[in-house]
Image (cartoon, rainbow, N blue to C red; front, side):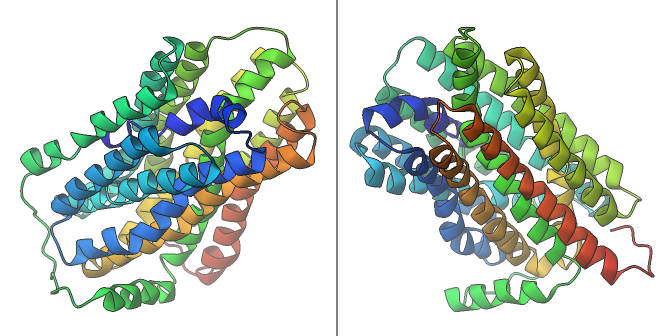
Amino acid sequence: MFSMAGFAAWPIYLVDLQKEWFLTNSEAGWISGSFFLGYVVATPFLVGLTDNYDARKLYFLSSLIGALGLILFSLLSYNFLSAFFLWSLVGAGFAGTYMPGLQILNARLDKKGKEKYVSVYTAFFGLGIAFSFFILGILKDYNLSWENSFLFVGVIQVFSGIPILLFSGGEIEKRSTSKFDGFSKIFKSIWRVTKNKHAMPYILGYGGHTYELFGFRSWTFACIVFLSYQFDEKLSNIFIANFIAIIGFTGIFASIWGAQFCIGKNRAYVVSNMGLICFIISIITAITFLLNLWLALIFLFIYNIFIIMDSGSLTTGTVVNGSPDDRGSRLALHSIIGFFGGALGGPIVGLCLDIFGGENNTMGWITGFISLGLGSLISSIVLKRYLIKLYKNDYIKE
């Protein structure tokens, strides 16, 4: 949770800094996406190394990298390029805490524990988002400058790695830890994961999922600001931030329920249907932007639940389909493809806004949110056509 303290910093201040730096919606979207590009670039190194080194030390180092990115953003950002590169550094730090944190957990769970608690860990991603929006919403409502807000959450992230070093306990899982033989071996190991026909559908599906999720996270604050003016109902910054925090928090339960529901069933079939339903919900949500502010808020809440519902199931599918020895490589590819999708979500919404009249045009927001729903549709199609077809004559439970 503390490692994600700065997650909402750019989304919260996007509208203000877009005006201050004269950014187009596409440029603002690319800054949103740079977080995930930084994540993708850092993942092969920080996640791949967990097969060779103590993941706890990598986690601690990465928490410092993310904190440094936030602090430097506060001190040095003044335009598109500086914000793009420094926000990507924050994302690189997150790459070394999210999946390595899952590695730390996996090494301390038996097989049954993995099925139960991997989804809990990924669901608490929502708690981190809720915490970040809550803290930054308060700071913005009290008119703290964006520079000081970034600095404040950066200092919080400095301390996020300490509990991992002190309280995580010993490993119970038996796995061979090979000596580090250079990054080329890590890249080869990650490439070999592409031949794992059991895990790859979940990895590809995760790409569609994160494209949708992080595009939603990046633009929801700005969207609600627009809707409040569109329907002439003034909403405070802290109300909007807390609303997003609440929907992030409820996502915890949606993700855990979705993963638990899949246990003992054909996971690919269930998750594929979840994706199709989520795509339909994205269209309904976009239509409510024409109707009523409060109806739109209700459906943004519902849409978030359906977006997050398959998150834990997709990651669990990657974790359980392979051996412990190369799980770091599987999770690395899972993150690379997943967060590459996340890097595209923000820019695509921004592009839709620029094409259809800007951030003050309802059609831009409608097309932007429908385009996000395509992520779930892609995930649904991949799982149906690839994994279910592969096992059409074999009922599987993994």
